[in-house]
Length: 310
Image (cartoon, rainbow, N blue to C red; front, side):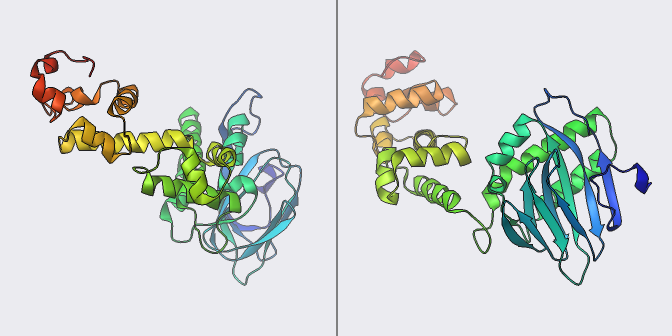
């Protein structure tokens, strides 16, 4: 059994559960899981390599160890999550009295590399997720599906691995060991937008509040978010305006003022560009009836023509 394992699998294990899906992926593959598993390592466990050809992600369940990568060493403990790119110089060694137990998954494809590089793991540091159950459950599910083999297993494991990479930044610990300066700057900007979107009208205002260059803020969002800072700001404004129009039936002018627009006509253009319907007709288009707007009160016939200009 041991001799049949790939050469990169350590023999310094007391118990293990592996799965292998695609160890020789096509060069055109964008994202896929090559293999993964769970290992209960021996007390003398030590892995040193620089020729590994996959993106690796590992999660510590129990025990203590030390990992060195990118020229920096980190302590590993239960809840530690770390990863590395192909051909990264890495060393992992057990350092505690109890055996190191960990999950791992190895990925291939250009999209896997890109998602990894744009996640907090891309900075080649250790993240802490002690007590965050879904992280371990993702690995557990990958082992479950991966062990079955076949195309469905490959698809399931790929979706789970992609979910892991996309979601870890949302719950990353901001305590000991968590967060680079760049990532904390992004979080500070994002949190401020979410808190003060109603009164904030530009990325320039945000830059002044956080004392960062506007272009640098845009780069942070390009790296850590799916939206630009301006798109996030506008989306939050329009979401709040839609709630006011739909749930409270406020006048269009008042909804505009509530989310920081002095010009109701400008607000209406942005709103229609976002939702495909003018704010005057938004409530009626989703089944709430007429809005309490001055235009509707003075010209009720307008409501008969869905999509009419304000």
